[in-house]
Amino acid sequence: MTTVVKLEGLVVRYENRFALQGVDLSFESGHIHTLLGPNGSGKTTIFKAVLGAVASEGAICRQPSSLRIGHLIEYPAFYAKLTLYENLQLFASYFNVNQARVVELLSVVGLAKQQDQRLSSTSLGMRQRLGIARALLGDPHVLLLDEPTNGLDPLGARQFRDLLLQIRDEQGAAIVVASHNLAEVSEISDDITFLRQGRVVFQTSQTGPFVVECAQGDLYDVELTSGTYRIRHQDTDTALTTTEALNLEDVYALLMEGEEQ
Image (cartoon, rainbow, N blue to C red):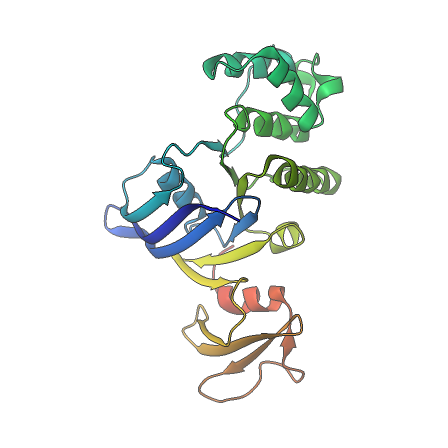
């Protein structure tokens, strides 16, 4: 496992507002790392900072220094009158990627049989897959995906999750997914980071005991034991539930209570 991107004390300001406040994170090759949080929590801003699209303070360490990054941020834009193959071939020409690689990537994302279909007649799920193929054209070390299952039906979302697992295992890239839907990403993520108001408030790689602060300001002691989280309120020293055993969704609800999703 190799760390390809490491963020240290990352700060981003928009006029007089902090979009990110001292974020420390690392992304490893061959892992799927999910950034989870409500709208405005800083997920997309992290992507923009890594891409150099916004001014930032702190350190963004890339390894290697010539790190290649593929990304799918917002809905992918393609040419409606061109076929899937023609669209990907057009973007491949910008990377000096040959025809064989275009055909290979269409196969990787499950579009080989539909490659001659016009984009205008395809589903959103197929366009998302084409967007992934485009992001893979430069053989990236890191793949940044912003809400990639938005607008997909349950079957399409499941197929997309399976595709990410396939890319992780076969391509070995570090895949970073921004999402606000824990159920969508929990089963495929190797690590999940909870973001709130531009800060990291929790990471599943932590086993504890550690302290978390909920949105209302209360402090809780948290410990992961046998796959469940045990949480106690610091001031009252009482368990959050009668069993004290909670899952990751319970922890997320506690941390984000009162936040607009």
